[in-house]
Length: 293
Ligand code: GUN
Image 1: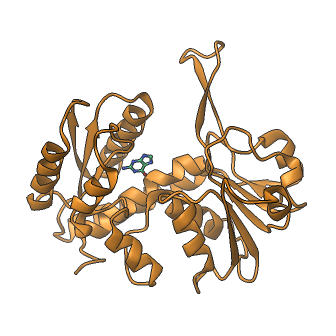
Image 2: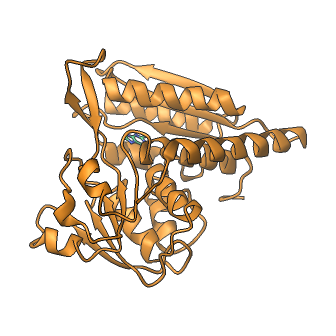
C-alpha cells in the first residue's frame, strides 16, 4: 500500500504557486486578491475560511474576509456579492457554504460573476467544465486530480466508482474522470443513496472515490485488492480525549482498507489539505485573466 500524502503534495503545490505569483508580480502583474464571505459562526466554516486566508498570506496573495451575522437577508447578501463583482481590486471570491437555511445557495452562487467564481460553483463554470472548455475547476475535484496525477496513477481504461453525487464533489469528479485527458479516460459509475448493490459495484472499482459524508462507511469488503482509494469525507465525531472535544473521521475505515488498497489517502492529511491548492490556483488564474481573457 502506498499512502498519498496530502501534506507533502499540498506543500509542493503551494510553493509552486508562491513562486509563480512572485514571478508574475515581479513582471508587473497585479497581486492576486481573494475575498471570502462568511455568514454566521459555524465552527467548521470558521476553520476552513481562516485556513484559506492564512494560505493567501503565506503565498503572497492579498485577502479580504467579509463576515456577516446569520440574520443577514438573502437580498442583503446578494448586494454584498454584487459589490465584490464590481470591485476591480478583487480578482476572485468565495461565499463559504453552508449558508443559513433562509438563504438559497443556488441564488447566491448564480449571483457571483463567473469570471470571479474561483470556487467553480457557478453554472457557467460547471457547464464549461462539462464541455471541456477553460473553466474554474472546484477545489476538491482539483485536489483529487492533482493527487492522482502527481502519484503517477494510470487512469486510462480503468473503472472509476464515485460514491456520492454532490454538486461540489461527486458530480464534477465523475465528469473529470471520464473526460479525454490525463487523469481521465475512465469508465465511470456514480453510486448514491438509491443505488442497489453498492458494495458489489464498489468492489469492481480500480479507482474508488468516496464522498458521501458518512464516517467510516467504506470497509474492506467494499474494496478490490490493489484499488486506489480516495477518501473525501471529513466528519467530526465526539472524542473527549481531544482538547477540541472531537476527532476527524473519513468516509473510509482506514486501518482495514489500507491493508487491501494499492494507494490510499488518509483523513486528516489527505484530500482536505489539497482543496485549498485548487482555490489558490484559480485565484492566480483569475488575476492573470487566464480563463476569461
Ligand atoms: N464548504 C465546504 N467546501 C466548500 C468549498 O469548497 N467552498 C465553499 N465556498 N464552501 C465550502
